[in-house]
Image (cartoon, rainbow, N blue to C red; front, top):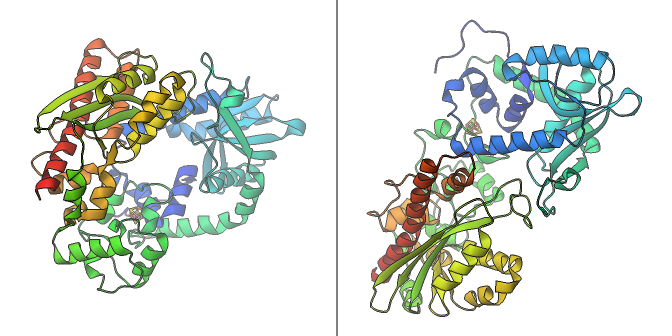
Length: 499
Ligand code: SF4
């Protein structure tokens, strides 16, 4: 790795680099000096950022009549100078995206409404539906800089989406859409630890090499670190984090024993549950496990057997009357139907247009599933969605709930309890199980290859701004993807029955 030569002055820290440093000093170092190692933002991340931007903009209207600092992150010094002028000038109702500098830390504050006696509240806007532990340092570093810069802060608050808000249609009622929580006490409690944390970060940044930090629990806590692939390169093929349901205490125990790879866990290692011991045995001996009981279970499937899969999306800002922030909305299903002789038919539904997909989806679902036959799914997702549909559509509730009356067969727990292959790498998701058990059937030939991509594609498809030709393209991609999921279940059951 080429290190920065002729040590440049230490970079100024920001709110995000402070948070990166709290997660991992190596992350802070690499993101500061080796940006080329950080993968570009993907479509899913960009969608999250875009939703965050929209939510931040909406939250400003909770404090109307303010002044927006429009300088982007490349012109933060201009934003800081401008904010200084605004604070010193005639009072304004609020400052949006104000820039502040203290102790070589620069922050932008989402909203700074002016309150009584020349004070300002600090409002940090989050697109979550609750205050999370990691939000406190985020607010505290802003409080640290604001107070250091001479701003008199009244309250420090988090404005987040209110998960109880039910959208009635029309314009959002912002006072209901957002919940504002006062976290002043928690942020103040955190303040004294900030100087030491900054010192540690600067010490790390002053090094000629990145700090030696081994990948561990911090890589996904509180956020997935974008450098995971870089840090894992050339490392063990079966890291202990791949043990199913590995608790933090088990990982700590393995770490203290110096065990990084499942293959190094000795027989009789205390602390593994039955499933983890099975995974360890399969990996150590490089062999698969299959309990013949799974065949008996699958022999009980009743014809016509429906292999069912839903696709859904969960917009942060509710789109349809009667829905809440982040409510999961199913918009598509695929059903492969197997008759008594093994003959297959395929039916599908994908909602068109920008209206609420739930009722047309529910009606078409009832039609395809009829009143008899097993409904094979992979996870509890479909059952949960059917229950939600029954609550949202009381006139269809009886028929929808009848689908759940002994007809659902969930393959996920069946596979988890009866089958393991070292190539599962600790996951029992369909995407992990399929390549190991049905290697000839994958998703590589499709444009949409997972549920998250399907959600994003649907959001694009129903966007009024999307050209018709692109909508048609997305529609075809979504149908191919969801159809492949149910085809995969058919093939998986065939494989397990014949194994
Ligand atoms: S992947 Fe883990 S070890 Fe590597 S920089 Fe990120 S948090 Fe640190």
